[in-house]
Length: 322
Image (cartoon, rainbow, N blue to C red; front, side, top):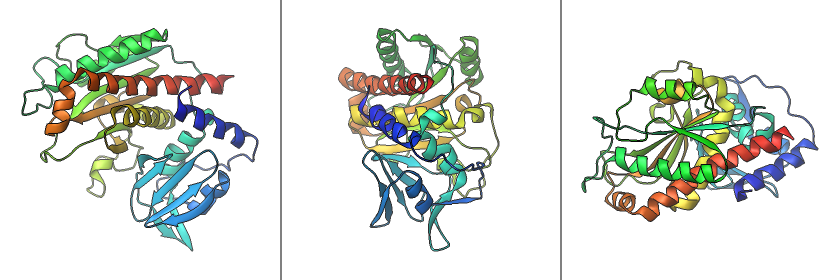
């Protein structure tokens, strides 16, 4: 079992022996105090600069006050809403507890009962859509196809069935990608991309899960963006578990900076027929990361991180079913 998966699973066993979690309806407005969260997981509490730190023998949660950033076992997780003062202490929104933190720490209570049998990998862009392009003319569509093929190889070595939305330099609409996953009977859907930004200093790796209904996406907070629900929202908790597993492993193997598990309403996430995540493997607009993307060793490291994350999620499902 992968180290992060093992760490979380041990904590699950301990929590099973304790009191059950009080019923909380996932609301975008109700608050959950950090003191409640610490008691729930039997964690001690301290402060470090702007962070409230909660920790037990197995896991740690750090929440940055007046911010949407949090860290679970050192991996960044973006909240839908900032942590704010509430009463005499700090609190986060209930939707972030129920659809983010608690599913990651108690995955056994949230993962689907069905064992994942089919993984659909979606290399982004293709054909007339090149995606991001670096100064050295590294095309996103080609780099991510190489990474996806490597992920496929690793998963198939573990006897996991894999389908690709595209295996060549072919253009597909976003809807065709979701339809392809549904037709294949996907139990997991992972879309693979490389980032681009106007600022060439932007760097790091990140993973996206579907934004909760009624909430802003990570990159649109407070700007009055789309807050609608989508098909993918029926898998909110599983999306968080899958996304966290992938991001945790991707940061470890790529050795790039951690931009976090974020939330977005990308069409392939919104229309996904199963738990889904979208991975950004680095910035082609950053000269250092473009050079890395040329390197087969880096593409292999990224592929290993993504495949380890998928395998870690499947391991959690299998453990929960026993």
